[in-house]
Length: 192
Image 1 (cartoon, rainbow, N blue to C red):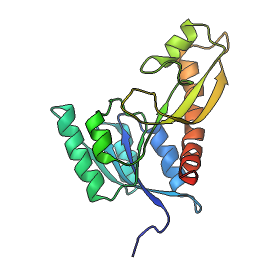
Image 2 (image 1 turned 30 degrees about the horizontal axis):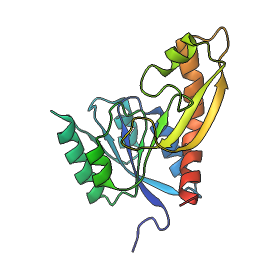
Image 3 (image 1 turned 90 degrees about the horizontal axis):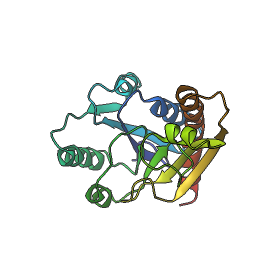
């Protein structure tokens, strides 16, 4: 018998403090949640988020890897072993290879701190401020082999004020990320 009937079995990849992971765990514990977080994997064995997921009684692995491919091989084995239905990247600072995406062959979602297709990649807040953008925000998108280019599932914007600094904008966008990631997952899963 299935342990979590109707709930999708989710793995989360992180690299750092795991603040988006926390918001996903909080959502997953709601009675009407569509997901159950089974596994957390980090490419940084010292990631603070691992402590949080371990304390939340979720299987957690910090994989120290010699190469990207050895990390991906190990991760794929864990994903398969745990019957994962979907992978969520939450502050995962590594680009997954096309080979990994094809082998996993199930949905992979990512949260990105910009209004995609604007500012793919890194330093999104700095680029938005430098270009005197009126708005920034966050996007949840499907992961494809092209960096930050998959179908956008959910987006929300924040106003950039004249007094905003890199730090204050980052804080504002992070708040929005925590709100929209669970909403994006619901939207994605209910559209399947």
